[in-house]
Length: 212
Ligand code: O7E
Image (cartoon, rainbow, N blue to C red; front, side):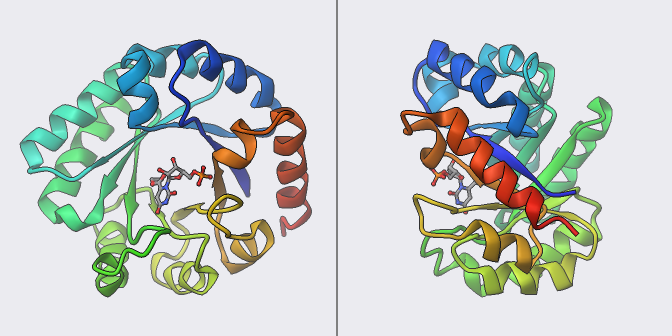
């Protein structure tokens, strides 16, 4: 199964809801990050969940206790999954995983960012191993470096790989899927377009065309 995730980094509630509805037939999940939650409030996660399952991208990276509070807030507001920074370490990941288990949710772990990420890149293989060994559900791997997606796929086996960095950041849909990503995360290419639905459809069809 390969698919598309919309990164809804818009600052306006009504626009977010409109975009989500507009592209819903082509996306599997909606990813909500700080720009939208800080603008529209945490309730936006609940509202969007009625359209598609929501991944709360709070890139949780605190001590275990605080991290578990953040994760709980996301799941209580109907998030399907949360994203954690693997650099926070095993105790934080385990604390978040415990909360997600209570809600039947999922936890995805950032290995290295699609940007320069010069510090995380030194440890991203180990972060992926940790995410795998403690039973997280997936990792985030950079579409801007398809060779890293391929390498991380070898480490995580059948875990989900979600890859941001396609389009606005220069990554390619085809190379990222061929390298082993399950989901492509796309934001600006879709939500700044005059025709978000047409762009989402095009990406969806290209992804599905590569499905093995
Ligand atoms: O570049 P865009 O507009 O297509 O948006 C990409 C989205 O993915 C945006 O929300 C950004 O915060 C996120 N992202 C990256 O771009 N690079 C990363 O390495 C990690 C993420 C991310 O979403 O992490 C958790 C999935």
